[in-house]
Length: 127
Image 1 (cartoon, rainbow, N blue to C red):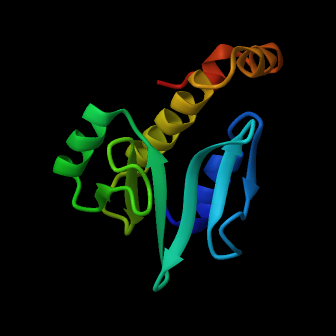
Image 2: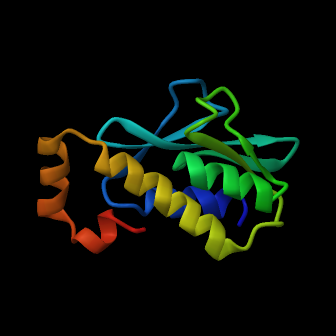
């Protein structure tokens, strides 16, 4: 998965939108004003910050060299993922889905219920 594919995948999540609060070089993906990922490029290689369950975050860092503690993020809950082709696309999609689901589950009840009225649960809760 490259930069363009990652961006498209994130923006296809229900109610997802992009923002640029840190400047034009960092795309932030949000659902209901809560960030579920960032995407940028470093020397032509995409990299993402994705929210992650703390135990799973450690496991992914052990398995994949291109997964490391979240750059400029809470390192317990966020991973930085380098999009260098070393992680299978299905696994990257799963990581994005997991991040999105964690954020949706953490929304205020009214915000979460509004999403649940608009979208099927299987599209909101992906893991």
